[in-house]
Image 1 (cartoon, rainbow, N blue to C red):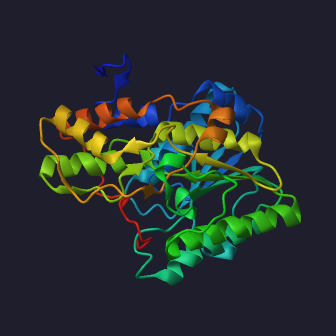
Image 2 (spheres, one colour; image 1 turned 180 degrees about the vertical axis):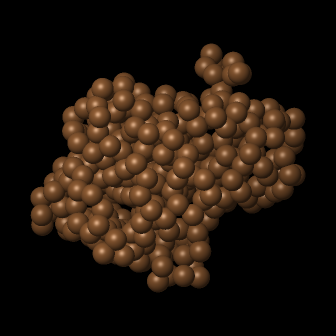
Length: 349
């Protein structure tokens, strides 16, 4: 069953339905994949986004009538995840991507999606931060130099910028805050070096922030509204995007891979006020949000002009997403308990 929203679209009400929606490929995804023949490796497929993105690839290949393999690669620490992907037609390979020997044993593939990353805990384990975010991408770029590579990055590579500007653009200087963000800049630089040196076609996707109803900025806000916790407004604005749209844009980026890399911000098309979003969630959840602090004049924001030109606007708007999250939370839908820490202004994760 689905619930009809005020915007005339359906909101997921069960986890099975949510997973189905997150992995449903758009026509644009099917067309893009048709331009990139051959198998697809999804490296880091066991993370928050990896399973739904891998399933979207599999479903798009099936719709296109392709018998290509979609190979999900991860250590798969979450119980039963590998089996769940295998049942849906994916080839599952358990691999520790930090080992160059393990990378060498992976099958050759003309298409690679690189999703590995380490963010939370980076203040305590900076060595792991750089190893995961910079060293592994260097290994991958060397191993798959003949492939098309889509690499996930983050909007955290940008500094805080004036809200009135509407967000950082892909050609802006990268002067971020904190060791995590600098390690992500290093990831981009080693990938760019490999692309320019070897002619490897790449796309770099700077994502912030995906929402899938079980986690994301809006889920953080809904949980705080329900718990009566104060919401810090010092980071007063953010970008959010439905994870299904983020998956679709990342896959479509395969067809745009180039040397030097095609770089694109992937996020929602509007600047979301944290205060306004919390107030709307409070209205829908019949709770009064509590706030502390005041909005600063700057925030971590990304312009999506390039993404909209390449992919069109996201299919799920921010108002839709707010209502979906409120509906999910009001029914006690499962949440992952993984806070985004969007409010962090000093880059300490």
